[in-house]
Length: 459
Image 1: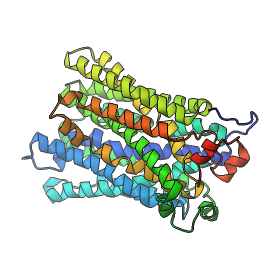
Image 2 (image 1 turned 180 degrees about the vertical axis):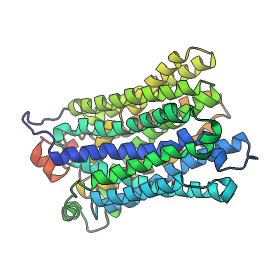
Image 3 (image 1 turned 90 degrees about the vertical axis):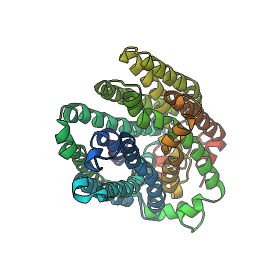
Image 4 (image 1 turned 90 degrees about the horizontal axis):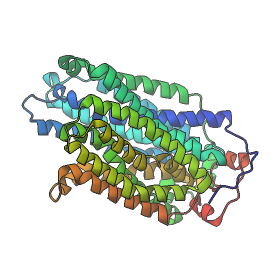
């Protein structure tokens, strides 16, 4: 169902534009801090571990360092989401920014096993968990703030641009890896080279804080008035209509993350360590894939403004279930048969576009599914808690390895993820014409609201 917005509806106000750019910055910083260990630490874990550790044990510890952050994000999403609906979006954005910037700085300065023994590895894991909590808070404030301040007719493109920030982060990490870290001597990399991307993350965090210091806070009193009860936002979210909304988008997001983890977190190690592709080629692939996938996020989110969020989400999910899993399977087959890397890369990009392209539409859809008084809680909780099961992908792949070749196990998770995603989209309402975002949205771009849309944003 297309939106029915007046042709002369205004564009982004200066405040909305600042909030939108802030949302992009938040996704860049978050994704950068999340995925830096996956790209940088595998070659440097010897700094934190004894030389007696086997290759398998080292790989396991690297996975733990990465996974612990994913598991911590739901904690931050719930805590900071609730705070975002009670003390304000900007305040929790600043708190979260200070937290993950300080943690990243401490990690960059950590001593290694030679000085602290196993305490070095334990401290690294603990800091990544604490940083993950603060990174979870980085979703609950900036993104709802940007979507709330966007005129109804521009929410799709704004959501697409915000989601593209994740691709920009992967681009930065891959570029640093290719140009600065790979040419470095192994001893230098293990001793101090790995620290450089973390120090760069600190600079990103400082820029994040400087930028958000200039963004206006929401009217906190009006958030309380928008809630149906006097309970804490999180408690209201877990009851009645809001709980039904939460369960629906939780199913949708769980499916999306199951498929996405295969194309973001697992793909580099699969290509390099299992399929024996050249690491430099894989890094170039990550750069190209991030650019193309980011463009698809913007394109699909813009399309959702015309044909509806639910339609875009359902059909991309259904297509992903078949096409993305098939592309991934053929990619593995070609790589195992020694085909040129270009063919392998093309299929990887195709799978990534099908799986990750809908993220921009999801950003808007999740915010439109919750009333303003519980929007930070709803968005932060749905976006992060749904990561728990998919973040344990190494466990599921290990189980599947008992019944099928290891290389093809991700195909099953992509297909299952696409199916859950499609079901979640199918049972949810359309929201593209919703009129329940911030009051300035309704004043700037009034829309004709349908009963289904009203349900999508009911408080």
